[in-house]
Length: 413
Ligand SMILES: [Zn+2]
Picture (cartoon, protein in one colour):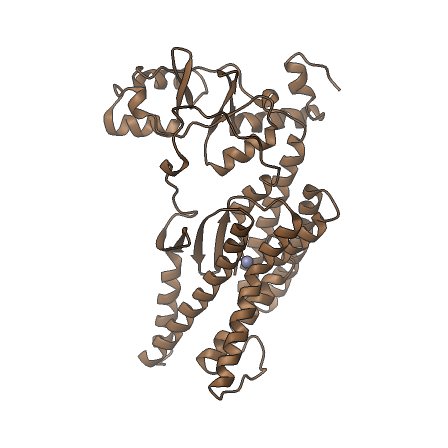
């Protein structure tokens, strides 16, 4: 039901709303994207299956939910006869949630946006999209697709129940009695309606944002939708106090999600107009493929750098990340050569690219550093830490871009 609505992915997605930057120069040693293995979005998740190339994970707490329902049935003296239908209902609800997420994912794919994976949690599903589609109209369709799937399921169930000669009582959304199919029908209606509430980053909030983005700058639209989302979270929280504690949990999720969206778009606004050249580190150390790992350890201890470009003579051949160093040390010791330890994909950018585009790439590829290459020569590094540092300094100087320009000998606006 995307209550938490891919908080983490969407955070990335929003930063990623910038037009795609030009492709980085291809280097002979760059490893293919497929060489990188991605894990689940959350720990304690197990891969259930793969649908249309999208890994589907189930979170461990989901098993706890099944155990909880089964044991409360038994403890309430309903006997083992009640356990089976209740378990089946939970599985059916989760299938509905999965189909909801697939609705988002497959619609996004139609617009050329990849979905990394889907994770099913007791509170709903999370689809990790690579980014948002570029056009607000497409974003609108992606957001609508999830609830639409639940409405279609509800309609199909309605037809099925009538076909079987049953009645669908209009008892309401919280009627948990009644035959299995009727319960599932109402649950799907609630899933659709609930997700349509404008609590960004739930689907309703995304729909609101897409509509706003049709008439204002994307970042403004995000900020407005995030503020509305926090308003909705407050209402959830207040209602939850009196009605249902679960609503309070959801309120916290919506609040945090909206907050994350708001910060991400503030970040994007702050980076607007800055180029990679203004945000890159130019004073850095590199290692050679034949160096032992102990060399990288020395350099890390002597300074702050954790990821090192690997240079063979003057040619850039790879990157030795902090994770590579730790893994190499643990498995083979400090004498292992850099060549053997480096595993990361080599990501390069040009100094003239937009800094927020580079940030997007760092997020999308889970990398820690981008190599800045000009005329086939390594001229700098872009790291998350350094962009953070730049923003902190800019905020202190309160003049976007001024410090960076000044520090590099340019003119100050
Ligand atoms: Zn959804």
